[in-house]
Length: 432
Image (cartoon, rainbow, N blue to C red):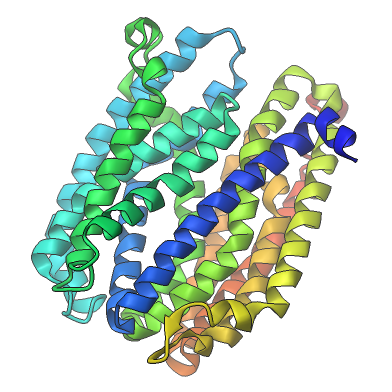
């Protein structure tokens, strides 16, 4: 069995990616455990919601450059370091400019965020300072994306998922006595993103500061915008599909309800963490096979799809039966997080439907039919938002979970329908 694994590059890299992702999951759960144990549920919800806003603003400010980076670099020849290094350097300039724009936008919106999403309980100055986290989180993501594109999958996974958690845990340990006092946890979170960004730069400094990075291979700014914009809606809608529920819980309910839903969602996201590890392994290779070895595409696609379904189904089933035990790990005697048990069960089903659509969605990008995928994702998001608006006021956090389930079922059905309608596995010469 071990020899089979070692001889199968896809399976071996997938297992290594999953191991790296598991480390990230464990560290992020350690952070969540400290937050739910040391902070009242309302303040825990406040910090969780702030993390979501930083992540969301950062993603929107990238407007698809991370998707373009992995697509262009992973498709390039292995020996073309000049192009890869130059593209990374250009991506840095890109996120620097757009991050500053979104930081300004955050500062303008801060009073509204404080009033409508944080129940007027968050310190406004701390909320405004947290805006700088957009830039440093983007640095972490761009470096992780580049590592993924050059097939350093384990480092990529650790950089994106483990690094921010490590820096936050270190700061919590250093300032343990101050962590729960006077909302100091907000500033510690902001500082942790700064430190994570600095470490991320060092991880790719050889490529970033190489001679090739400053040569003619750097991409023009207008060219990057033109290429990245069509890819951006995929990232935007995917983010909102995952986090719109939490944001709308924050809008309709209390910070304490956000904390409950966050823990249910975070546990269900274990499925997505494993899915992300598989994506980091499969997507660059699928791109490479499609462009360099098209005759092998069909078999590689179905092999990858079977791998995704088998792993995600096994994980979802195990977590369903262990859900109450996992939830009891969070909080303490006065903060009972097992109240989110029913929501967690619903979310596990929702993530399973989402996972099944992964490899089929990749083919829309590879065949340059992104507009169809954007339409599907847009309709799924609309389904999610409308369902949330109707269900959360009546059913609370369970309504938010049901909205995610409805949206993901719609997503899978639509993706499969258009995948077969457009015959995306066929080569162009087979269609003519």
